[in-house]
Length: 317
Image (cartoon, rainbow, N blue to C red; front, top):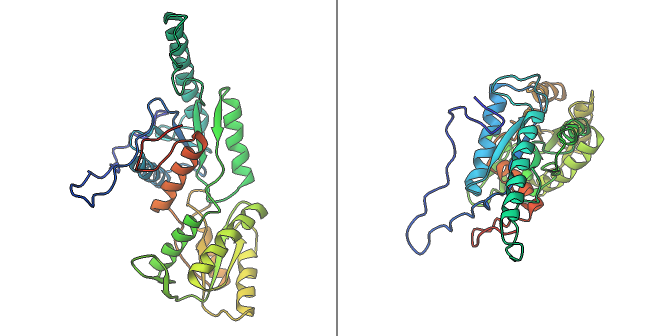
């Protein structure tokens, strides 16, 4: 089960790979700076075991890229104090209390030190209590509003990052999901298309006009990879996916695929398949815990704090 301090479900945890000997060994990954604020993954949607497994796998990927990372899960739409599904408010409240305690320890240490000493203050003593990363592939004003409310009501200094997309890594993940469904074929080396089973893609998202606009940018990157037209459409707007499919057919596409530009928990899992059936498309799976998602979550956290993720050197601020 989980707690505000993080997951404790007994599921396997992705561990950093052991360093291999030899001149061609992979560089060791950087480690999280001592005392760096925790990463809080803000997970939308109704909490359930599948969502928890997904979130834990994504954070496991992030920890494997930055050993020592303090990463926690907060459920945006958790009701009450459901065991195993800590609400985002509770996770942030716990992080705020820990931050206050560390700040007090730093203050006491400074008072005890020689007043003439030039010793620097602890690196992260004046930093944020935590960095909140929304588990969203693109903008969703309703979910973002709930996350901001939790951050503001916590009464402490938190930093909130942008959503994960648009981003080239999302286009890569969408390509892989399409290939897994037999809707696009990719080579092993660089994931560039050899041939595609679909000659038109509807990129489906949720979150309103802003989300569709952001998905459209990722769609252009996906189109460049597949060399087929890609149109973004809103799953939560009645008839939008069907209209996009009709537009693709009118421009010459005949075999259409629906690619959910969704990580998973932000929409009803039946929504993409229902929209695909109505539009006469074959649907791929949502992005899920594809490795690029975990890397994007970590990159947003590290960029905000100024932590360098290069494996060639220790992270710095």
